[in-house]
Length: 444
Ligand code: GLU
Image 1: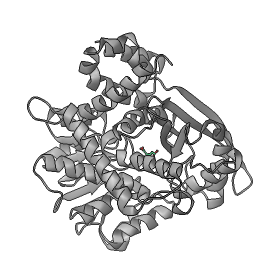
Image 2 (image 1 turned 60 degrees about the vertical axis):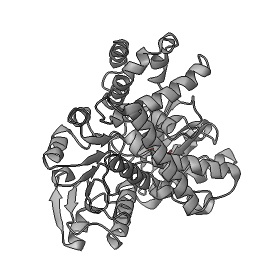
Image 3 (image 1 turned 90 degrees about the horizontal axis):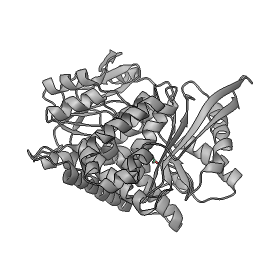
């Protein structure tokens, strides 16, 4: 009841911030029972405090394009919650970026980071700048202009940005270079850095690898194996690449990838050199997957989503709300075994409700994709110690973290009928950790 009232007042305060309100609503519904069991949380205003970001920086980013014309974008950094550790989270450069989307991402990040068991708070930043069609020099000037404003507010023990959609190793390099020049320090304030200047092995693969390790755990819980399963993946960026690579290494067959232009269906499976080709596709900056169909002689479905294919496992790996209730119903009708979000909030609220109601094996992004930020946490540890771990060491730690997150979801999400509600499990486990840390630190 109480959570419903808080939600109503939030809707009144932030009208139109749909993604943010969607993310908050899901968490508040999940935690209602445990919240009611802890009257001390109510007295301390834990929910009222946890749903609002600590602070938001909004700023103008003027930069000069290759024709000498001045362009202006908006930049943001949402420092959401630092009860557990320094603010930590990615940077998204995409035309769809608004304050609402970054607030939803920062909110999700707070609970996701708590689930990793590492000491990281939640934050997120970005801009409505799109790298599509921009020259390398334009991307560099934009990244530098973004940091010229943001550098004062970030640092290795304050706020540690990383990549997200539209921000890969190239953009991190340009941002880190400018940060280092202005801050006059080389303390690893960003993660996702290049290997030559403080980055961690396995960080590029981590979100996808971790997602597959989580899916393997979900299947194992049901006595199933990923080997021989067909997999639909959406997107074709860093996350989709890592997921396709690990899934194919473990003997699954990835049959789709997608872009804003549509999806391709490769019945022979995307493996080996075809996975490397995903990186070439991404590097063109055109943001289309159609050339894959041409190169490998497979079918391209313009303007469609991959969820119409009959597969055992569906993995949204692109952007929020990319799988709706109609897509979920289609997958269910086609006998899907498991749906796991590797993108943040990849499914709409209606799709999530439908899957949980039907008892489908489903897990949310804040648990499934936490391997990315967890490995960022491992990069921070290596930077703080001034040393680097081997690929095997990082991968083993990532694997252990994903197993632990899965275990937390089972503990908090198992229903009396045996169904594991991963949404509830992830939200309750994440919330309890952040709430207890906030209680211990007083009203700040
Ligand atoms: N953007 C990624 C996420 O959504 C990674 C964040 C990070 O490494 O800090 O979790």
